[in-house]
Image (cartoon, rainbow, N blue to C red):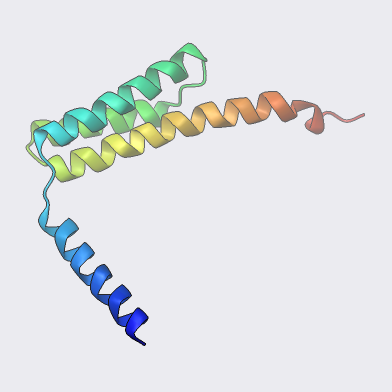
Length: 102
């Protein structure tokens, strides 16, 4: 029971701490730079998705409006989309023969 109590307190204080921390312009810049790097790599691999570009534009708009929490989330989403596009391409390259009728 004590163990559960410690876990509960840790979660409560963890959520409270994360809720009180608002994203800053620097947080956005860091998240956007990671998204840009991943998208650049996806473009080089010719696997870029249009949804990634849209998410990056939305992140930039949110940052320009001063909504850094939203901007960071959108930049992280764009990074995840770029990484997913590369992962999909690698998976398809490795398994395309499974789709061919023999």
